[in-house]
Length: 132
Image 1 (cartoon, rainbow, N blue to C red):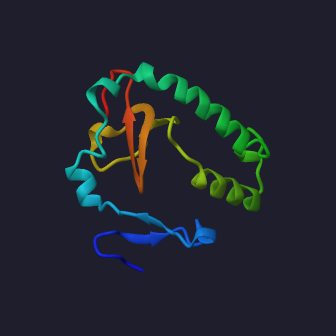
Image 2 (cartoon, rainbow, N blue to C red):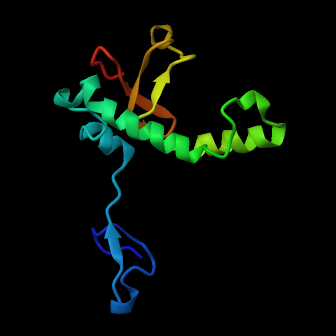
């Protein structure tokens, strides 16, 4: 339930033995934008900072996809569908990506490391230390 000014109750079963729940205040998307939650601080926009994260991501991706062959052309339609599902569920923080298509044509072919991932949007730091 809701307590006055206390947010929504979450985590049913957490602390049940003591008769307690967990109270989590939800932050709206508008408040996140206005509060700067979605901004990468200037001191953290250097590509070199994220290279170790990219190395970790490569290990993560290799483990996550190890049961698929390196050449996806060799996959049957069923296996290809499973591969696509697996990739869609992956966390892309640290992945090196290249923009293939975008509404803004200046973004096409841009490359960098994913530093922030939200629903349908990646923030990427480029080798020129730009976050886009």
